[in-house]
Length: 242
Image (tube, rainbow, N blue to C red; front, side, top):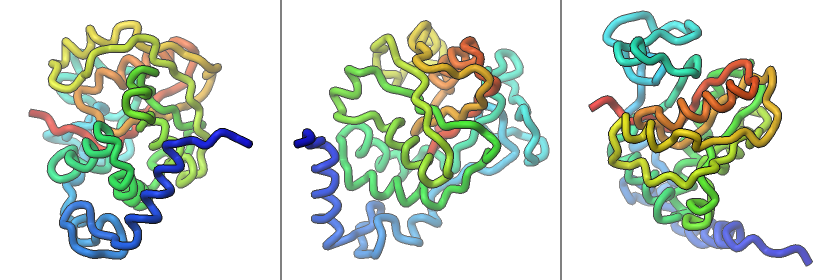
């Protein structure tokens, strides 16, 4: 008999149990879905024009220009990826939902995230594959899952695009939360290795949240060094500039 994946079994049980009394994860009202229409409409969204790093520009045209235009900070150090997109702003109450899922392993919160993904169209259908920005194996062991891989697999099914887990995190870096931009950059030197052939491929790097973009930069540089033709970045949410 095949071994039972404990996390998947728990997920199925949680779904069957909690779906009996479905409440909105934000307002707590009984609903037919995990995020009610009223709360969905209130989530802060990012609107163009956007820099290549995903932050709002003070001027410019929204457009679909690629490579995306650069803000003042990125003019000094342009990102290696050609564009990034995040449909939502990482702010209350979405930040609470993502933290519940990411740091507490709340699989009910995952249902709400899946609903947010279902309403998100593919921004770049001409790309070749989705590549998760991986966690180190120790982090996966602590959490019981890799949220970026699960997010990528979900998007691959929705967008009809293959998932290519081409990266490995070869260093267990300290938690990035609370670190400055320069500290994050030093933290990630040599953090990624390419585990699969990517030569000539146009890849979408997928993660849950982009804060400073340091992880996305380091991972993109690794993919490009190994021959990827282009890298773009998609995250569910983007931390606004302080």
